[in-house]
Length: 484
Length: 95
Image 1 (cartoon, each protein chain N blue to C red):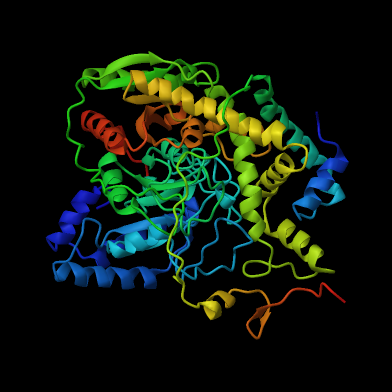
Image 2: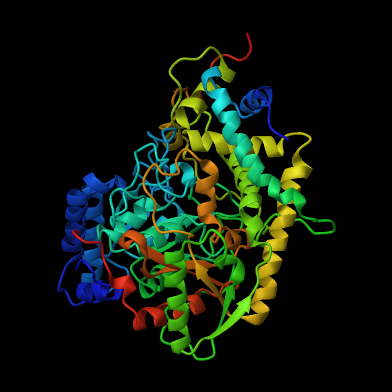
């Protein structure tokens, strides 16, 4: 059960070898045993989970099961969940009980999946290490002294330590892919607009995208089948024909053109990561793929542009947290303005405050052209790089993160060093392209290395096909941390 | 162009985030590090490049002008820090 795929779990449920209640109890037991040391979950509510599991068992009994019916899934605490505490990793939402369900949660509920709990994360998804959470840092199951990556680090640690068969995450600059890489998982950020943002607490609305995190590409395909789809409640949700993301998994890769961007193999890439990625590219060659040298000449500008655009959007989105309608309010204040100042100073952690200040500055009178407009032009250059690249190749492949997982506290005092973690993942967000990370080996300290795969718009099925074929030929994705 | 301490205080006031005199200097240093990183953009010639505000170029959808929401005031107000008779309470603004 510990290492079973979603397909295997689904089959076991269908054949009544196990009930959803038993499965849910099993993973709740895992959480009870391991969460004290890993801090992957902010909220667990066994009663609620088991009620859903009982309903799932009835549904299976009546023959109305879908592929994920009865399967427990952990959700990043950024998804508003009715009746569940929904904190977004922040003190300012430490008393916020979800009054409705995010569209993603609704879809999992409709599919009959079980909400296993709400996972820890960087506050408001701002971070690459899951250290900025008000609820304490998440530990990497491969080495408890290391970060699991972030911001979806709780979801990553939960799946890596087999406390959950699968989880959801969100990705604004790499927050699904980087923790998937650092924790030895598979994670997918879909094309912008594929998964509804309704009820997904906003960080940078033009970049935010929800997606699945799991042990394999095949599991990701099953999860994406549930998560993706049009939602009238999200003005940027894409209206298009539904796809089955499982359909192409078994296609051979002969003739697939893999673009390898030289800019992602230069200065800053750790040698151990580079070696694992090179070996993976060779493996793709054995599977029949063709290697094409490409350039993404502006990708070095993605971090500077991102740290204008994302904070600008965040400063606007987070203005709603004012202590008036919900969330934390300061106890003492002189007047309304003082109430805002104190509420927000107390309610937000240092990193969130920092990004609101950056965003406020770049949008303030007299600076808009020099920063925000400039960053939007750079964003266009970065997107155009991919337009050129996809004329020569089908997928762009490189490292997900420049290094393996780093020590907790190692970069916490230096925001710029932390920001540079996302140098390979941010371009896909700026362009709105789908990106994924799959395990491709181990580096220093026996820590996992992630392989980054970027596809053209709505090429998720092709990316999952490539990832699945790689995972049929290798077993990196089946490795689990010792002692779990 | 590094930010002065006064600019940091002014931004904090615009953002309605209280900042103590003890922390303003540390915040200034960190913001200036970040703006140094951001400053790498300025060397790039972007004349004639169309700004990209969004991943999708398409226009926003329209919908029929009819009521889609039900009244959930009581549920939403159950989350309010202070309320009375269906209203959200804040400190007095006008004497």
